[in-house]
Image (cartoon, rainbow, N blue to C red; front, side, top):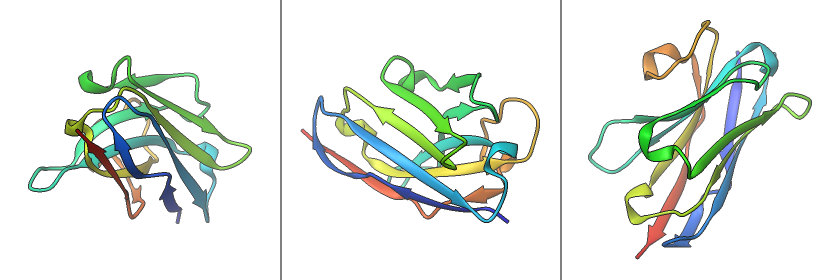
Length: 124
């Protein structure tokens, strides 16, 4: 059983940056691929970014490419999401998730453990 706790969300102006963190405990962090998702009010949870177990492979959805960077520190059991050039459309609750499956995981059903989320609000 893996427990995940996100932090680093907050209120930022358009064009600003935030760095989200996700602290893992209770399991072997390095044996799980990791992902970030987000959910805006009234919308479904959507995929943002994926990173492989060793951190040598990443994958991003369209809106995240060039603006967001996913990374991990397996020695610290922590996942990160650096978000730059934020826009009001990025306002959402951001979730980290852990997957035991092989290969790139881009859907919620591919993930086994979820954090409680952290709110990101981008003001115009």
